[in-house]
Length: 309
Image 1 (cartoon, helix red, strand yellow):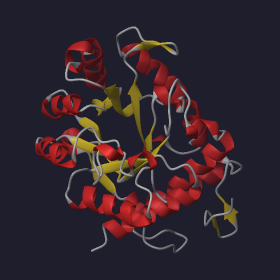
Image 2 (tube, helix red, strand yellow):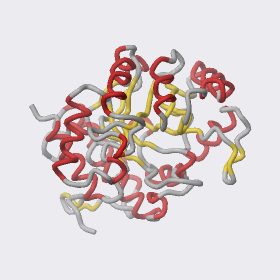
Image 3 (cartoon, rainbow, N blue to C red):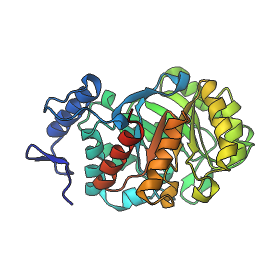
Image 4 (tube, one colour):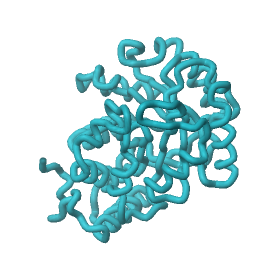
């Protein structure tokens, strides 16, 4: 597929060299910081603006590239498109200055992301990953976080991770059920191996605990303007006060299911969801599982529109 990723006679794809990619990343970073790219491109998108996640101090772009659409058992739609297409996708993100990468053990996307980012200076992108703190047919979780994070760092070829979450909290007992993992993540955070910790929530009870827990730096929360019919944990009216409470307490909020995992389909409804989550100050950033370059271009454009004026 040809998209506007071909600029000045250069295509950002899986075939681009490491040196060319490093140049692309440097140019995008300069555009994001200075507001003008060396190539005289337009001003960077609002999606590429850097925001700080609450009191954590971690800075990310407002939009994250999700890598786990329909993810399960270390596989997702993103890994199933293959390494070449995955690499092209991530490099289009980076060209636009979208440098926040959302991955997880569950998705199987660590090593895909490592390959896609080969050649990019580590300080030019941010990684959020997630521990699946349960024993499954695909995952022999031992109850702690140290071994998991050591493996993640090898798979991603990095000394540290900016954000690590306990993945998919499903009830209000998660602080008891996963206490060991929380303690070990706190130790890794104290050593600088992890910069911020938190949870992704798939249950309203879990979300309420996360919003109040002093351990949590970052919450990945399901939020859109529709509610439970679009994969939220509860109604909009129930969820919003808790997100506002968490933000007021200094927690970083990253929104997911902004488009309801595909249930919010029309352009008008997608625009309405983005206006809702950003216009009401409910999130610092969002993650979207964009699968094609055209989807990246469209999402970036819609964020610009939602934040215009």
